[in-house]
Length: 219
Image: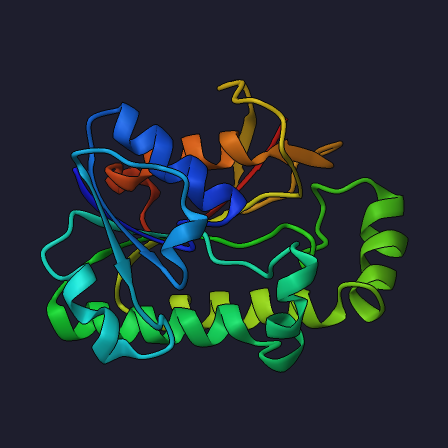
């Protein structure tokens, strides 16, 4: 497939790029700083662009089989200023991507979100009624609000979208063994490795059965 990856230099995005290239896909990686993407390959094109400007990214999404967004708030201390100055980065980027795709006729979008903002019957009682509500009011208030707004922007579009909702992310190696569930949290699903999130993103990119669904995953 011809894929475009946003957030390609982040932890999950780099995994999407690497695994996608290994699988034979042709990838356009959209980044702010090319030096942060430690991948080279004949099937990889690296584009420096501002994801918040639909006109700047239109060419990167035109004619692609699927667009995968692994954008998130940086874990790097040196870049936390970006998080503070643009707390709704994911939501604004999603609106820009949706606009660029609509303008160019692109249809397929896979976007990585988070399970944290969503407390439901799939969670255990402590997580559902205590931990998530508390964390959503304190530690992760801004980040989770950004993810919720991002999903709202995607859902409001008429694209063929799929949202992935992982729990806490780790840097463990790819397992290919993870649980998934449509529309409901996974009991005991507290972590998942970024490599497995990337594996699922690539797996669903060409799967029409996952259109307009939110998929939870966990190791």
